[in-house]
Structures are given as structure tokens and as C-alpha cells.
Length: 305
Image: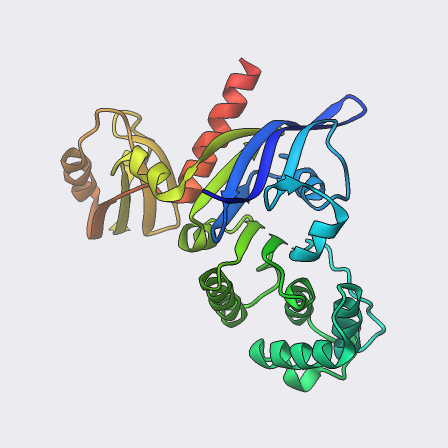
């Protein structure tokens, strides 16, 4: 199997603070990969080493099977969480200029910019200054800047930030189309629902270390069908019963919960019906958000033990 990205025991410290601690994972060609973790977990520090902004204190970064070098970066596209556009320049000028930095001639850069602006519903804004756009529209322009040179590997840090549902749907379709073209995509985000729908594999990092690394469907299958989605009217005092419920997320008349070890879903339903009218009761795999929260919590517990 050919890998687009390989991190081998990468470590990065800033004075006494270890931001990334012996991190290793590989991303196969043509895969969408999620790099996840709570704030301060080391995601951004890891990404900065993938694109050569910083250098590991130890370990190795390989891209397209080779040690990371400036020549290889022309095949990489990077969308930073913080925008890097020239706010006083017009959108089209921004995109053409940034494409030129990647070696694209002006006529071709202009054609590509027009095509992408049309695709992301920004065609009529091409002659507007970046500062005149909404946050979501600026995010679309930043995304175009990251892919206009047609990279083989895209690293996207919070790519859906600022996008409304319609914009998120358009970007989702674009990412899937790029995957069909054989492109490899790594993205970091806090939107677990998006990760569940798009990613083939994930790496969850906490305190600079990998705490969960696997194919997404295998991770979810390993947890079994121990979660319940329950829609109801009335009261559910059972949510505080540790013999039945290990954890819950109550939205008011709708709750997602994890069964306690050994608890029976039939018993849960029986108790629920004593105090509430049940409109929906479904036994499901846990969501990635539940797995994320549980894994981070258990990691902290071990650290503080």
C-alpha cells in the first residue's frame, strides 16, 4: 500500500512543554483522514510539521514516500484555520497571485479561479475585496487558494468554519469529488458529524499523543450497539440511575445515552415507559462524538491517576 503521508515517532517540544509526543500514523493514497482532538491536543503543531513550517525534534515526516522537502510541497495544499488572504486585494487577484506562487501561469490561474468561484457560488464576487465578504465567503476563497494548484495532498484545518448548511453541503461534495480523483485529504475539525460522514480513518490525539487510531467503521463496530436514541414526552428520572445509564446527553425530549455495563435495553425501555411517553427507541452504535468524549475522558483519568 502506498502512503501519501507517514509520521514516524514525531516529537515537538516548546521549552518544557511537549506539544507532540512520539506521534505515528500513515495515510494511504486517496483516503480522507480525520485528525481529531480537544483544544490544545497538538493537532496544529502536528500539521505545521507536515508542511515544513516547523521541524520535529525527533522522528520523521515523509510525504509521497520521501522525506519532506520544499520540492514536494508544490504537491500539497494547505488550508489554515486562520485566514491568510490579502484583505485589501480583490478575490480574483488574490487567487491568481497565490496560484502564481505555485508556478501556475496567469492565463491558466485566471481560468481556474473563475471555474472555482463559479463552483462555490462566488462568481459575482470576483472583483470584490476580501474584507467585504462574510466569514463563510472568505472561507470558500481560502479553500480555493488551497486547491487551485491541483495538489495531490490537501491538509485542511477546520475547513467548514463559518460555512452555513448550504455552503457546508457544497464543500462536502467538492471533497468527495476530489477523493474520487485520487486525491488524499487530511482534515482537522471539531464537527464530529462531518467526520463520521466523510472520513475513512481517524487519529484522535490528546496531550500530544495518539489515543485512538483506526479505520472509522472498525472503531464504531468495536463499541457494539450499546447506545440508545430515545425521543419522549414527560420525565426520565432513569437518566441518573447508574445501574441503567453510563452516560447521557439530554436535549430535552430527546436523549442519547450509553447503557451501563450489563444493563438490558428492554429493562431501560420498561423503566422509561413508567414516567414518559416514548415516541422513538432505537439501539444504535455510539456516535463518534460519544467515542471522542469517552476516549478523552478516560485518557485524562489515566493521566491524573
